Every structure is written in structure tokens, then in C-alpha cells.
Amino acid sequence: DRDETYGPNKPFRDLAWGLATQGIAVLRYDKRTLVHAQVMKDHIADLTVQDETIDDALAAVALLRSTDKIDPARVFLAGHSLGGYLAPRIAAQTSDLAGIILLAGNARPLDVLIVEQVHYLLSLKSELSDEDRAQLNTIEADAEALKTLDASTDPATTYFGIPAAYWLDLKQYDPVATAQTLTLPMLILQGERDYQVTMTDFQLWQDGLAGHDNVTFISY
Image 1: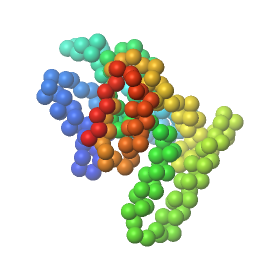
Image 2: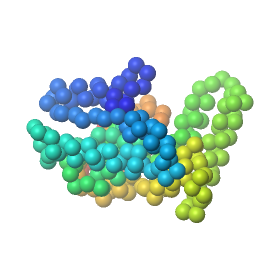
Image 3: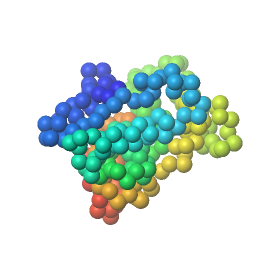
Image 4: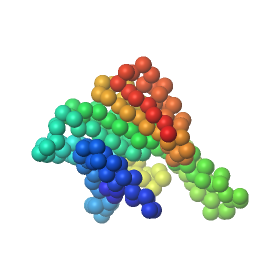
């Protein structure tokens, strides 16, 4: 949701309030897949991140730029996790942004992260159950199958429960390479104890954008 609610935590609300106390207006919105879940489900066979995330982000930028008391030349986009991963792609589709902020945005493909996250979580258990092993086998098989995904793949095929079209679209996207083409300011932030998006990703951003004077890196 617009607060990025997770248990008792609402990090997007916290950020919005903090920025507002500094005189910075913030537009937050519920994700399309939350508000229009059934509509999105009806079209899931050809769903991509363009439909899921990017189009609404671009609409939000356009709305802010036409809003009274907002400086249209000073609109920034902040995205967390998937939003950070896609921020360079969003910025590449508009000239209306003054800069982008990536909060724990992954530099590696989502399927790589999914496998890594499951391995990490299972490593915290003293003993794996049959269900745990079955889950691990399934995700590793999906990750391996994704390597051969191409335009000829049956659209009904799913990987990690998500249709081929979604993964095929992402397979053609390199976030670091896209960021290298941008000249607008970029702020890349990372939590050092984050296990979902890790310091490995942060290092990839640093390596790929070394020498770019429009990028600032901070880890916490």
C-alpha cells in the first residue's frame, strides 16, 4: 500500500512525514495490483512491470508537475526494492524528473535474489523439513528454467508463479546499464544488514557507476 505497510512498520509514511517537516511535498499511492487486484489478475498472462509499476509512476510524476505549489522542475522519484530496481527505467522514459532515489534497489535479476533469499531464510533453521526441501527444489528449478526463456516460450509458462511475459520483459532490462545512460542526479541508498537486497547489489551499483559525478552512494 501507499505506506509500504509490513507488520507494524510503515516506512513510506515515515519518510513522507519526515520529508514534509522539511517542506518537501510527497505523493504516495497504492500499487495498482493492490487496488485493482482482480483486473490485474484477469490480464496476468501479459503482465509486465510497465503495467504493474512504471505507468503509474509516470502518471504520478505528471500529476505532481501539474499540481499547484509544486515546482515542476524539482520532482524526484524515490523507489524501494522493486521500485529502486526500476527507477532508472522509469527515468529513461521521461524528461520530467529532477533526480531519482534508489532505496535498496537490486542490481541483480529478481530470480537470483529469490533463490538467495530462500537459501538465507532456510539457513536460519536448525533442520529442514520435507516441505522446505521441496520449496528449495522448486525455486531452483524455476531459476534454472528461466535461463532458457525466450520469445518462443509458451506464454502460459510460469516461473515462481509469475507468467513468462513478466520475466521476458525483465530479461531485457539491465538496471545498471540503464543508469549509466542517465545524466540526472541519483542517490543510491542501502542497508548493510538487508538480506533481501544486499551489499552485493550495492557494490554492483558502485562498480557500474564509478566515475559518474551525478551519483551519490550511502550505506547504513
